Amino acid sequence: MRRAIVTAAAVFLVLGTGVGFTHGRTITVDDDGPADFSTIQAAIDDANEGDTVFVALGTYKEDVIMKDGVNLQGAGAEETTIDGCGMYTVVRGANSCRLDGFTITGYVDYDIHGVYCEHAQNLTISHNIIKNNTEYGIFYYGQISSLVISNNIIVGNRSGGIYCSTWEAHPETEALIINNIICDNHHSNQDICLWSGTSPMFVNNIIGGFEYCDHWGSPLFMWNNILSHQTGGSNISVEPMFVARGHYDWDTWTWYDGDYHLKSEARHWDANGGRWTKDEVTSPCIDAGDPMTPIGLEPFPNAGIINMGAYGGTAEASKSYFGNPPCEVIVAGDVNGDCKVNFLDFRLMALHWLEER
Image (cartoon, rainbow, N blue to C red):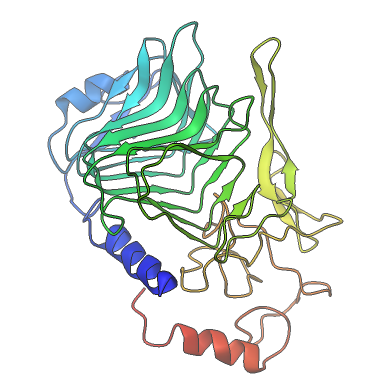
């Protein structure tokens, strides 16, 4: 029953919010090239509901306040950085909009969150690297509805990864936290902090430390996550086998970046080299997500089941390994990519029969 609840709610939150489906102007930002504006905030201030602010490659040293109904799109998290320079927060979220494709960081001498959401409605935070902030990576509280946090890498934040504090919360409409990597935050490994009746749903995440800071007994919905400590259900507790884990030097408060792709004997994507690289081991997080979650853009072979973590469902998802060299030729009917057409392929087809994607 719990699995059915999670899946239904996931569909509602991802498809039912309407976030990102409005059409308006595209306003461009580039700090060192031709564009409509040279700063992100100036572009947002000029935007109207339904517009998208597209930010070119570069590092933008500013704090950003989003506007209701205006999407903020970076050119890619590895190449587009918002580096906070003020107090309290780098990016303040708004209603009915999307924050996508940035590195968000704010290491300063005073408290600063990566993304701050207060009473957020219909907000999606996706495909970002949120790291090295002096407070939490994502801080949200209040009356939250249809908040989606997906495919983010949230690491190296000094107070913790995600702080959740809501009231009058309903798990089917509060927050869906899906396919993220949330680890290596805080020296005591406090990657998730739950307060005040919070009931978010966690699906397909890789989470380091989990803490009930002041949980008031509301139900917690967790499905197909990998955790440092087992919490029951279908969650597992094993080493995720990242390519290279980032780490803090807590003596000097210095964060050293890692590579959070998953190792695979069938190859992982090497972003620095721009190629697929073979490993000696295969991560247990590959093909370990909720079978009802679409695999999205995962490259072949992908076993027909989404990977856990931030790269699950993306073109940079690590490839599936079946104990043999990857198929050189894609065979018709070989859904999972194991070079065979058999009952496993039929099972995957039947599982998603007549689904609309």
